[in-house]
Amino acid sequence: MAIEDNPVSRIKYGQELKARREAAGLTQEELSRLAVMSRTHIAHIEAGRRRPDIADARRLDAVLKTDGFFERFLPVLEGPHVAEHFAEALEFERYAVMIRQYAPKLVPGFLQTEAYAREVLSSGYPPKNDQERDRLLEARLERARVLDDFDNPVVWTMLDEAVLRRPIGGPLVMCEQLQHLLAMGESRRIRLHVLPYAAGAHALLEGLVSLMWFSDLPPIAYVEGLKNGRVWEPPSVVRQCQEVYDHALGDALSNRASLALIRSVSEDYEHAAK
Image (cartoon, rainbow, N blue to C red; front, side, top):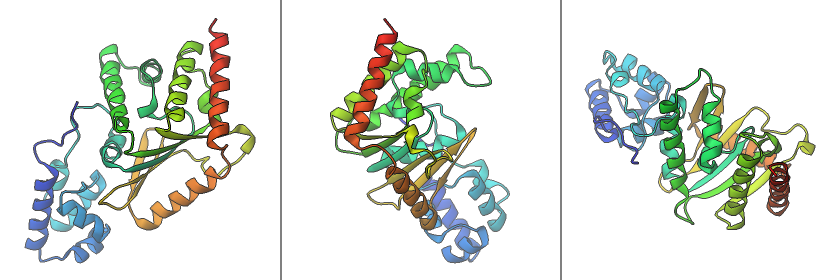
């Protein structure tokens, strides 16, 4: 399943932004100050490499007096059904060469098994009918294709111990899910670390974070909470997120010890299922 922009492509969108900026007699630097956006971000949008979020689009409309043009024609992702706040991060995820993520409560989406993902998507509020749940499930399973290439992206995944202990779907579902993580970790396709309960308070208590690096773009950070998420691009913010991640990683178990813990918990679920 391909992920595509709508007919107003990012390239055409960027060309339109450049044309309207120049018609207003503004340089990228001047527009960046007036719209409270970085000049680099504006340059990437104009080149078709990135797209603004809705807040950026509204600021561009206000500064350029374009009567809502950039908000109305903001490129949106079609195909996969995902939460609106995650759509931009999903697009970045497809092009990342390195991903380092921390999951405080659930197995990250592209590492979820079908049974585990179905349970997660069935538990949301407001309730979804089976058709909508299955559309979301298909999109989530499609995300796993980002791991089809063994070498790219490089993925480090740090899981809170709560991810292993919360019995999503019951013992059989959890056993299968943890066995899947083990297979990915033992094959060295991903590097796994567990932040144990014994670590106590740590630097990432506030929630999920995903750090992404690219071959031809600056790195970004994505952070998420209940019903909201945000992609951060300013270098100072991204560096801070990277530092926080590294600090928490220092409290996590080693890769070898993490795999041993995942294996042990998986065996506990296997015994409970008998």
